[in-house]
Image (tube, rainbow, N blue to C red; front, side, top):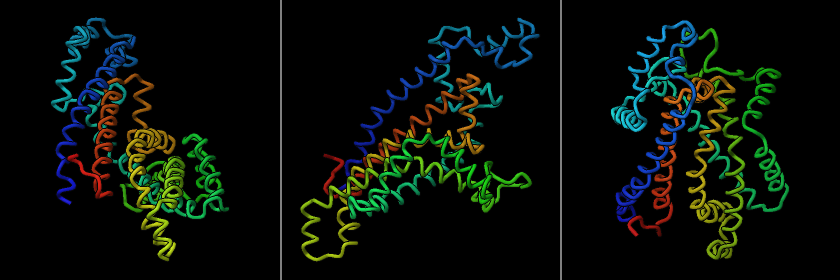
Length: 328
């Protein structure tokens, strides 16, 4: 195992050489969008009071924020603040951006993690079974359902689930993190409220994974080592999960890393539909209110998470296949 991961440090350094320019370009793009906005940040900060505010007061706000400085100066100052942990001031939330993200990122991470765990387990099981009984009733039904769900927008699935399971049947809450009368965030109350949004997010993201596993396992079942295992008389369960599925896991790991941005985007929509206190609601609010400091911070955070997931995918390759050497 230690020899297999001997080149992990080299892989991390190579990924950093790619990640740093990507993050810099992303930051430049977000800053350029904010600079090109016709919205006056001083008036945006003042809100309705800007209509009656003294122009000298607005000018003083601009001077304090340095928005009249040349763009390169503003960008370097913004980057310097980012490196010191100062993400700026959210004009839509009227509080530091760091506080907004710190208070809500955990809930988004929880929803994404739970949904991803459900997607992985369900897709591995359902995809493998469909491949084992290829072109059977279960396989055809599963593929038809996957194609149908893939065509449905995630917000539509969320609204339909609320209409059925919350309003019509009354089984689950329609939104929020706790009941209105709750005085805190108890584990049982939070878990009850997260069931529907987590399942909606998982169902909306599952088709790609299910179909990918199904096709990968179906191809693996025709490999020589799987056919040899079948010829030796090994049980079907051992052949399916011990040989064919394991071979199909390597490309499946790549799908996890590349699909993370869509999963995060789906989480933002799900949190908005179900009124969850994650990054979804504040992202929509920031977009509608042209809150570029908050949008820039969330974009950079998401980009860093995707780059980290791609690095974890490379390391997982080495863990899943002993033939892969990271130092090669």
